[in-house]
Amino acid sequence: MYQTNSLISRGALTAMIVAINGGATWVAICQSQTPPDIGELFDMVRLTAACAAVGGVLASPLFGTSGFKGVALALFGAVLATAIGAALAAGVIGGTPGIVFGPLFVLTILVTEPHVGGTWLLIMAAAHAAAETERSGSQV
Image (cartoon, rainbow, N blue to C red; front, side, top):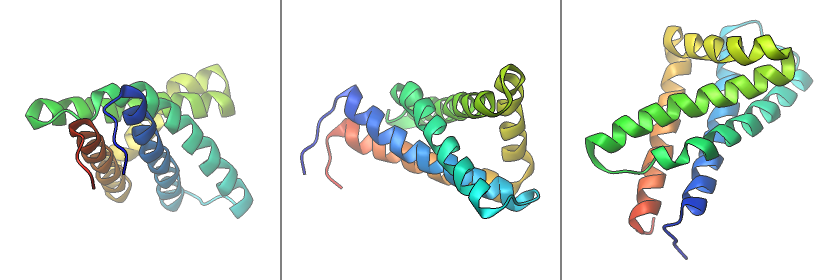
């Protein structure tokens, strides 16, 4: 397996995992709210995953550092990636007010719904671990 320690490679890896997290988080949110019809759900999963990927790319430099500092940076990066993705998705759906209220809605759900917050945290921890492995040049 070819490994690089470049920011581009780590950014792509982080974006992919954060995109999966965006879609999974939206499905978990729908489970705690009134579920939409299946067609609308798939459209929203695609939108949230794409927007989360953008947030993942932008926050990717914060993932992958080892030690306590790395965990703190990754946690901040996870929140930042989530806020960016939520702002983009809500902005597409609801215009300018969505840019402000989208991140507030998602972060509130993450804190108040344990199954949503737990799913989000586990996938973000996987993103950090994968980025740390990529940064160190180890093979999985």
